[in-house]
Length: 427
Image (tube, rainbow, N blue to C red; front, side, top):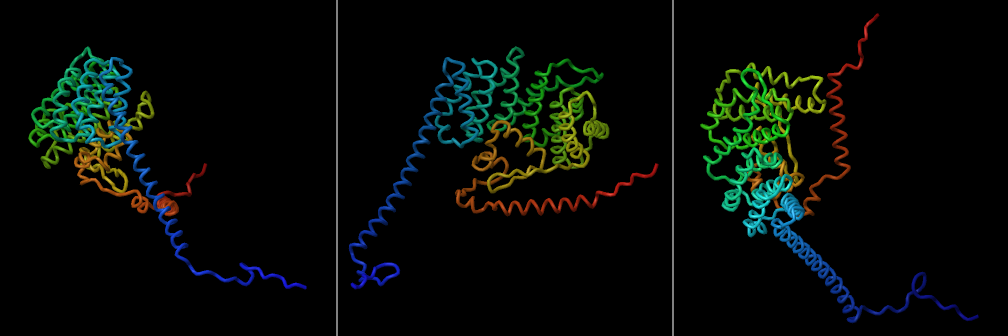
């Protein structure tokens, strides 16, 4: 029988193997170069696509800016909303600074010629523009153009009430950011005082007849006044404390819960400021004020909504501690890899005002906006790439174990003060 042929390869005897030739080496080198060129071309394509997306985004912004002076009110409104969203979610300093006066002209036109909702959007956009530009000559130029328009609408009793409310809030923040003359700051505060003092309960106990929308206007004016109070000089704070600390408690009797809360927070803020200036400060009606604050902190009137009572009690417990003991319930804000502690009424008032305009983009602005970081003393922005950020985050298992341990510790601590054996007594 013929002998079976031996198979080469697996399971059999291997044939003669040729040495690694120059041709094979060149083929492998070509394959490596090919894969490298593919990666390079992919990176270039990604960079080009990102550049194209940036160009498209800037083109849309230019269209929005041009549309703020369109004849159609609907087009103007859409342009204002588009610019607001962009400025709230991105840092656009270089793009905006070159076109700031064009944007300012569009805002001015919308404030003067627009109606209601359009005026509100224009007022909000003015604040976001100042936040983007920061505290400097550029924002001063913008505010110098818009300040008289804000004050005209604010003091015009025949103007749209929503527009007046928006101007009251926007004028306060723009003054904080862009006003360089402290005397003009005081003049703006007097403008706010002329509004919210109309909601004071009179000395004979009678209450002024004010409709809910006007009350909201007075509330916005009071909060803007309190915001500017945070940048006043020591001597001016003393004058304001003497003038208003005896009158502000009259607003605590207002029927509107937002006005009561705004008045309580303003009183706590003023106490904090005057005690920093004069640690030995003594308020004449301190005991009666504490009684009034305690009543609001434990309010259980049936004619008030449950949510309003819950919100009011929570705020006034903190206000009462501030007036009685000078304490503040601190709060930690986390953004990216950083943390910021809200540890005073001054910081709380400032943070709440910025967040009202920036909204969900507040954490991003805290990370990247140099002006806002300077306001809250956070230092220059931290540049961390996505890979480093991912490495710094804890894993899902680590977070689960940490939460479980915290829950166990919290349960043990609570059980120390909770008697599970209830003594029901005998009948």
